[in-house]
Image (tube, rainbow, N blue to C red; front, side, top):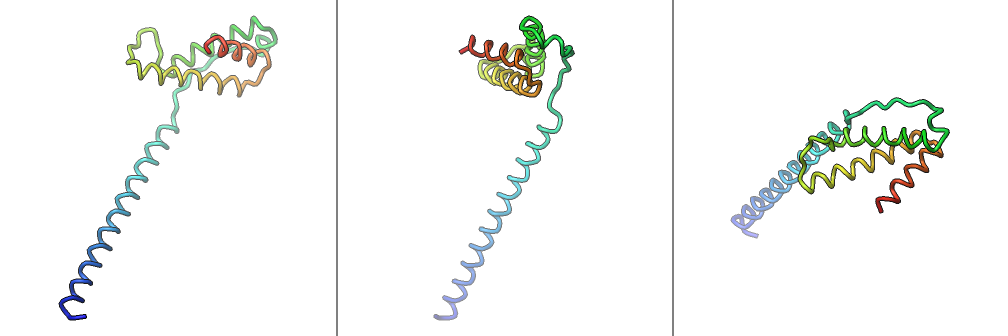
Length: 126
């Protein structure tokens, strides 16, 4: 290999390594940014307190009343207020949010009557 060729090969290899390192660095920075945004979104999710008594969950009527309160709270948390104007896409996301929030809170409360009311409500929608 001549000296001119070896210089060219070394320069070309150096350029490729530099470009590869820059690409890896840029990818790492993008992933780091995405992780920070995701972590920031999860740290302070919106919350609404709902008060009820354990005795309310002993009957179907009481459980239905508590479920209505939970549903109203889920609508508030997910941005589906009466005065809110949303695009069709935003409304779809908000409705999925309401479904998820209700399923989560019903699972955490873990009372048979409330679970039954929730199951009946989701069957009516489907």
